[in-house]
Amino acid sequence: MDHTLFLEARARVLADLLARHLATAEAVSVLEDACSSRRWWAEQWPEGEVYVAGLVAQDVQDALFESAGRWPMCLACQDGPVHALYIQPDLGGPDPVWVCEETGEVAAALGELNQR
Image (cartoon, rainbow, N blue to C red; front, side, top):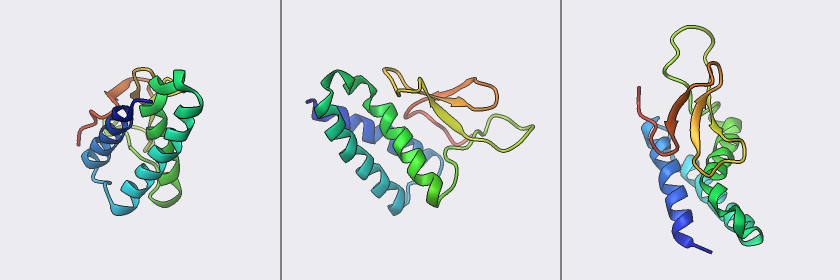
């Protein structure tokens, strides 16, 4: 198993947490937990390594929903209800992107969210 895969996944999700000012101790702990559980998952299914980064992002998003609310929020849409972005494709890879849940437009690649 390629350990740099998990370092890269962690770095990409952390970059998005930082971009949206949510890199709290709790969020980083959630990220560490997600990386640990996906490491086990990837050991069981080595062909699934291409999905790890997106799945880690989804795991963090799901875990933060309970404590911090929806993350990351879509900042591009000015009209309509407040809404979040989600990882596409659903399985998280091989090239995960954040997509607006209202318009279906790609907001950014995983790890490339900005503050706007």
